[in-house]
Length: 303
Image (cartoon, rainbow, N blue to C red; front, side):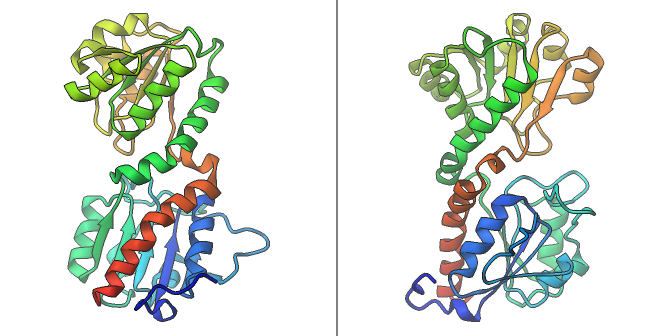
């Protein structure tokens, strides 16, 4: 067991880990090493169990009496459901489900939708979002890129080397992806609004464009990778892509690609959510490295 942080009474803390995938197995395991009581529901449960972690019979049971709830990084679906591909039914954290948490309660997650925020406000629960924490995104970035490479290999008949690819957006993942594409020998184009980000991509070897230039660039592209969680790859772009083009959306909901328009065009598209699950131990540990200090700060402040 890890040494307890000075002044932090982990053994008096109940943590619920709800939803997710194999990354949450590692998060729950690491949470239990602090001495906290950890309950889990909604992610794949290993046959051997997880030391120090109790498998609950439902999300409501896991959350009952918990001071902290850890929800997955991938964004909440439009239905309000947590990312939980292994769950037999959608896990939708409504007011009834959350009402059993111990006050003052805290939910730590990638980001919450308006419904979750309304429920939390009504119940006096504080949300702590970390989807946009650059350090954590960069820590799990290599696993996301490796997962993306698998998606590309499985869905194309050409190599990335010498392919014409466009990376849309230059946030943390777009920044990494453009550099990987350059390193792999792709003819790499970057479309982004921010001129400083475009300049950095140029310095890394990419050909850069303002976002509105993507329409004119489209006919030359073999692959498009969108990293922006807003509709930036619309019908105007999709209708101009070659028939063989692969379109991959790496953004959280609502995503950056008009999938209906892509389907009408007959394009191969992939919404590549949860790519960090390709290395669950590494990514789970990196996520916990961001969650743990948040919990410690809350407990130290008496929250």
